[in-house]
Image (cartoon, rainbow, N blue to C red; front, side, top):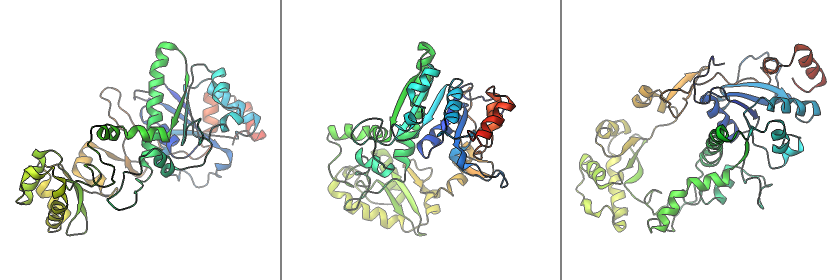
Amino acid sequence: MRGQATGPLAGVRVLEIQAMGPGPFCAMMLSDFGAEVIRVDRVGAVSDGTGGQASADVLSRGRRSVAVDLKRPGGTDLVLRMVEQADVLIEGYRPGVMERLGLGPDACLARNPRLIYGRVTGWGQDGPWAAHAGHDINYISLAGVLWPIGRDGDAPVPPLNYVGDFGGGGMLLAVGICAALAERASSGRGQVIDAAMVDGAALLNSFMYGMRAMGQWGAERGRNLLDTGAPFYETYETSDGKWVSVGSIESKFFGNLVRCLGLDIDLETQGDQASWPVLRKRLAAVFRTRTRDEWTALLADADACFAPVLSPWEAPEHPHNAERGTFIESFGVTQPGPAPRFGRTPAAIGGPPPESGQHTDEILGGLGFDAAEIARLRSAGDVA
């Protein structure tokens, strides 16, 4: 694990109740920012330890793990005692689950009125769908975000689980926690954060409502400026079966692109949607005449809003990413480094992903539990 943390959240202690997706992403960000993150794992997830540190789950980096049986009164009481010494708690269960475990906001804030209690769910803590099952694709569907993503005449294309789980869920919760910590500095009081992925995904779509209101976004998928409707904001296949991206929205950049491609095009027609199908065919034909890397060599410095489409496995090797250290190798795994970057309090990866329960004795000892008490908890099955 990290030595003395230097990030902007150094000195903040976070309890993460083990879950999937947005919660771990949020906790990873807070850890990268310098917070001490303790993950409360299930006792059933603890292995016999013979495999050593085998996990390469990047989202779990920078934690320590304590394994607790939350269904036992002793386990519940243990977590409440941990809450007394925490600044933040993160949980991602369906509404009502933490309350049934005796670990809801009322119980935790009674123990620690300064606690920031962060909750991330798909549908939110209330509303007609609050108790429904769902995943990222469902949340962004109801938020109106999935519908616009796709080409003219084709079905909507799920953007993996970036928008709901990570952008509209985990990252939104991290922002909310940082804001609540800032507010607590003046009020001295904690509060509950209800981060719903349906809300966060809708928030990410704010720009579209503005464009629609200004008459700059139509009602058809794949016919608008940023949804592959415009041929100058598009991806094109190259002669080697790879791809390049063009984002030459402004006339200056479009002119630079056209000149570099050697096309005879009236630049005044760029905004004429009736001309877009012909322009798309011409651009596609030209890009198929060279390889992706040849186009990159020709266009990279052309100031034409161009970039090669790299796979996740190629991206770490690109000179720009390599020089900036956008990707790093940590605990034997190539992965994105912490972001954003802080000039005075740099973020850093706090350590490798833990095995479940790897630090139970260490964590409880650091919280004031003596060896006999830890042994009693383990014997009773409250921890592992």
